[in-house]
Image (tube, rainbow over all chains, first blue to last red; front, top):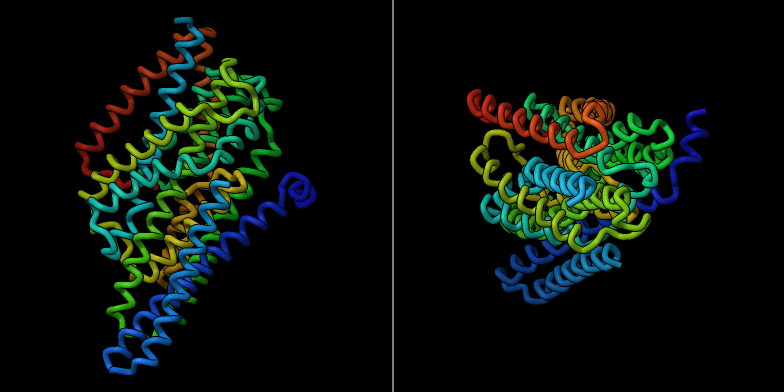
Length: 82
Length: 366
């Protein structure tokens, strides 16, 4: 009885969309930002040891993490204000 | 000035006072994580949060629309009903602050308005579909979702950076907390300031100054944004004085994950028009980030208190809202009832503050 009532009253589709958006944004930004830190830390370490190819490769990883994080934040703000 | 205008002014002033207390009450939630990990100094964190709370209030109007149109039937509501609801919310917030109980300003606000509308008009004034579907069910789900997102986020962070040297990693996450803390302040501003906008819009609709379904006027948005930002700033100075005794210790990665998870849940919910308890969401995200590292790090007692407060706040604020409406009716339909209630409320608040100051610093209810 209660479940039937809730099924008709609650817009589960909208709730699910909000939940998925929060999950993707929250975990996604944690992933991309961790990638940025990982890449930056390893790149610094490699350049200190004069391993320039490795340092450049990790710098690319850091850049990808930075770009993805920035893009996610900007996209979130655009969706919110749109 | 007509008596109807006077009542409307009282309602707007009471709503902005509520908004101010909301910012004052919730500052700790917004800034505590950044301060506890030393990502920002307390002064910078509080100022930053106040500015971004202000900015956040301009992002969206979905939550305001829910409060104005989907909780109570706007066509049978009067400004006095809105006033009584606001008093119910403020009284409950102050009572929980006084006794150190966790509470949600949002649930108190909606509960107060529902209670006074029910007392004034009856069950037909309450849009139960909106209350259950847009407020109560999302309010139950949101802290759990924040817990899961916070927990998964910290697991992801540790998996990626866990074997790196702690120095650069900590510095990196502290820097990240400047962004995630800012997003959290924006999220808080947008969801919480909009509730006040919605209530003022409801009063304006009731007084015939705003069409049903219309967006709140710009002066409502600016004043609600200003009130919550001022509350955040002033409440923050009080928090600074008591820092270091109540804040849960966490590392920078946990702080980043908790703030990111809280922001994501609040902003996504605001986009769909769900008026959440930001206090509960942030608490859920912090507990999730704690559990992701070590399950025993979670203060399960706090989780129990949140559930208890969730069950209690809505009916308690509704009962006080209904009682307040009954008291205003003793003085008739005019402005005398609201004026008497305001005078008595201010006297009670002053007495409560004086007593608390004599007893020592209170525990914030958030």
